Amino acid sequence: MPSPRMGGHSPVSNKKPKNTKKTLSRLLRYLNKYWVYLLISIISIAFVTLGTVFATRLIGVAIDKYIAKFDFKGLIKICATLLAIYAGTSFCMWLQSNLFLIVGQNVVASIRKEIFEKIQKLPLKYFDNTTHGELMSRVTNDVDNISMALNSSISQVFQSGLTIFGTLAMMIYLSIPLTIATIISIPIMLIATKAITSRSRKYYKEKQERLGKLNGFIEEIISGQKVVKVFCQEEEMTESFSKRNDDLLQVGVRAEVFSGMIGPIMMALNNMTYAIVVATGGFMMVAGFPMTLGTISNFIIFSRQFTRPLNELANQVNAMMSAFAGAERVFEVLDEAEELVDTPEALELREVEGEVVLSDVNFSYEEGNPILKDVNLYAKPGQTIALVGPTGAGKTTIINLLTRFYDIDKGTITIDGRNIKAIKRNSLRSSLGIVLQDTYLFTDTIRENIRYGRLNATDDEIKKAAKLANAHEFIRRLPDGYDTVLSDGGGNLSQGQRQMLAIARAILANPSVLILDEATSSVDTRTEVKIQEAMQNLMKGRTNFVIAHRLSTIKDADLIAVVNHGQIIERGNHEELMREKGFYYALYSNQFDTEKAV
Image (cartoon, rainbow, N blue to C red):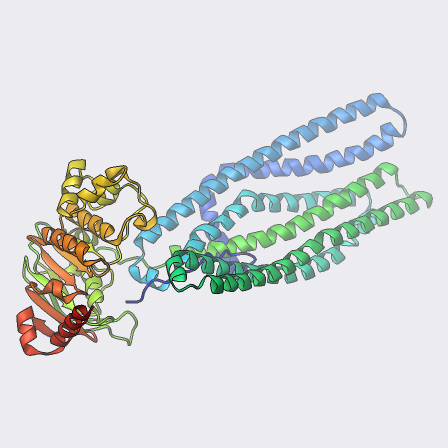
C-alpha cells in the first residue's frame, strides 16, 4: 500500500488561475447570500468616490471665489461643506470596509467548513497520493488568499475603478487640454508597471516555491530529530538548511528589489505630471485661455487621484489573481470524488456473529499492477486468523479491503453472508475494531482518547477498558491520571503505553470483528507480555485477524494464512505448517534462529 508522503506548506502567491471566469462564478455563489451587505457597500463606495471628487472641485472653487477675493465668510461656509463631505465619506469608508470584512469572514468560514467536511469524506486513496503539506497548503494558505481578496481587494477594486472614472469625468468637464496633460504620462506608468511586475511576479513565484521547499525541509527535520541525532547528521542538516535558506534569500532579494522599484518610478512620473499640468495651465492663463488657479490646483490633486487608483488596481488585480488561483486549488479538493455513497438499499449490521469470507478477491492500487490475486479466506465466528508473510506481500491490503478503505476490483467479501458492498460503511466499520502498529493518539486527555472508541461511554466504562488493556496502572501513576493531556501523537508516552491505550479504545468500542496489525512489533519483550495479555482480553469472543511480525505470538491461531506476492500460498495451524516445511517453516525458523542468536 502506498504510504502517505510528508511535505511542507506551499503558499500560493502570484499564480494565475486556469479558468478565472469559472472560479469567479463559483465564488459569487458564496456571496449571493450577502447581497444586501454588498449592495450597501457598493453604494457607500460610490458615495466616497463622488464625495472625494466633488470635495476636490470645491477646493478649486474656494481658491477662485473666496481665497483670491478674501471672502472669509464664504470660505468658512465652503470649509464647513468640505468638513461635512469628508465626515460622510469617512463614515461610508468605515461602513463598506466593515461590511466587506463581515462578508469575507463569513464566506471564508463557510469554505473552511466545507473543505474540512470534504476531507472527512475523501477516500484513503486521496491521502495516499497527496502530501500532507500540499493538503495543508490548500486548507490554510489558499483559503487565506481568498480571505484577503474578499476582505479588502474586491472593495479596493470597486473604489479604484469608480475613482478613475469619476475623476476623469470631472477633469474632462473642467478642461480637456489639462486632462490630456494629466493622463499623458499614464501609458508610461502602465508600461513601466507591467514590465516591473512581470519580473517581480516571476521572482515572487519562485520565492514562494523555495519557501515551500524550505518549510517542507524544516518540517521533515523536526519530525526526524531522533534519526538526525542518532546518525550525527546535525552539521550536514545545518549546511543543507543554509543552502536552501541562501537560495530563498537570493530570490527574495530580487523579488523585493524589483517590487520596490515601482514606488520611486511612480513618484517620479507623478512629479513629472505635476510639472506638465502646472506648465500647461500657466501657459493657458498667460495665453488668455479660460483657466484659473483653482482649476490648476484641482488638476494637481486630480492627477494624484487618477494615478494612485491605477497603481492600486494593478496591485489588487495581482492579489485577486492569486486569490482565484488559491480558490481553484480549494475547489479542486471540494470536487474530489468522495467515498462511494451508500445506496438506499444498504443494510445495517446488527448482532454480528463474525463469519468473514473472502472469495476470489482481486485488487490493485494502480491499474495494471495487481496487489492481490484470487485470494480466498474463510473465518468462522470466534476464530483467530493470522496473516503472515514478507513486507509488501499484501497483508495490510487485505485489512484495507475488509474495512472498505478501498473497494475490491473483483470477487466478494462477506460478513455473516452479506456482501460488505451492501452494508452501510459506518455500520460496517462500527462492527470492526482496529489496533494498528502505528497508534495515533489525539492531543487531548487520556480519558478522551480512550473514549474515542465510544463517545457515550461513562468514566467507569473507560476505566474498566483500561484495566482490561493493562493500562490502568501506568495511567494511575501519571501526575493527572486519566486527565493527563497527551502531546502530539502521544509523544509523552512510550510506544507500549500508546499501544495499550489503543487496545483500551478498541475494548471500549466492543467490536464483533477485531483487526490487529502488527500491534506488538515495536515494543520490548516485557511490554509485549502485558500487551499480549491485554489483546487476549480484547480477542475473547470475537473473530480476529492478526497481522503478525513476531511469529511466536500467533502459534495458537486457529488458522495461519501465508501471503506472498498477493496470494495465499499456505494455510493451516502452526503445527501443520511446520510439518509441511514450506514457506512458513522457513520464516519461523529464520526468525527463531535470529531471536535465539540475539
